[in-house]
Image: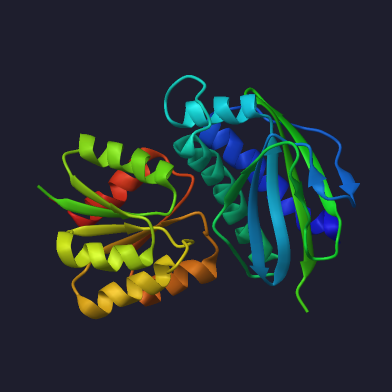
Length: 155
Length: 119
């Protein structure tokens, strides 16, 4: 079930990264993780509520986030200042938003929370819903991005 | 000069859209959530509001409803990543004139605006 609920987010990520960044996107083997999300420079988190509950996160290196933010702002790789973080957060918002369209079609009408950006490798993020994460690694022309999805069907 | 109020909690999206609309000759003001949008609407009196949905403090559907209650002639286009059918219907019921799903090409926003201001 976890894998099925993750599908809309991976599909949406490929579509948004292609459209927004003009990047080719390669998908790699997914894994299931039980431990808290840790070890990433930059993590964008979005809560999912409604028919399913949990979170979606994007994790990437500072270099990848800077390159993405720079491209989205129409320039070279950018410092990850507040505007840069806002650009990367918006990418997560678009992915989660697009995924809710497919979730609704699958019978799980859902909503999303505003994104938040956490920086620092030392940060640990727990899913808070008692389920593990599906991790889907992607490679773009800007670097590697991992999509983390921890969702369960709401009671 | 036509006035557009941009409502989005993402500073980046406001910056990008403001740049696009300023280049097209619109006067632009910004708000970062629904509460700010209602306040700004009263002072700026825009010809058009571009409204996000998912925002802290007050979401865009609630803000659309509030603005339409205060000014039935207000013209509001929703610009959101939430493109599910139920959300589009809710936005239209709240009084939105159109719904643009993110990510969008700049032309998509300009076309939606042209439909509102046909001349």
